Length: 122
Image (cartoon, rainbow, N blue to C red):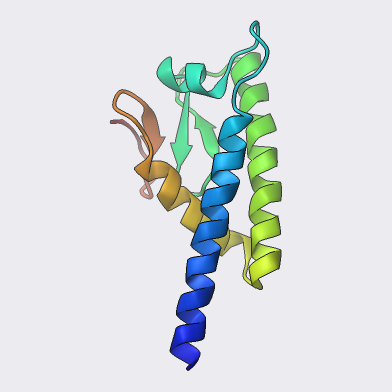
């Protein structure tokens, strides 16, 4: 019985993280003059990290990119904390699940930082 409850909890946690990521994705586009998440990824300015957050690809730091990363990472952290609270788990575990999901969604030509801390382009 305990195994089924653990499996059910894990499924719910993954489902919640996925829903949070979809919700964050809908808010990824900013006003026309501002840099959007999709544009920044396409330009190789930032990338996904295994911890569930965005990071600056080396050599691409500027105020606009840093502001975009801060804004999105703050929303992600709040959403991850909400999922953690709802499921009685830790923020770190939700960040890890989200990181795996987000790394799996990196498109060809985009940058990501793997678990070993090195930036790579898919």
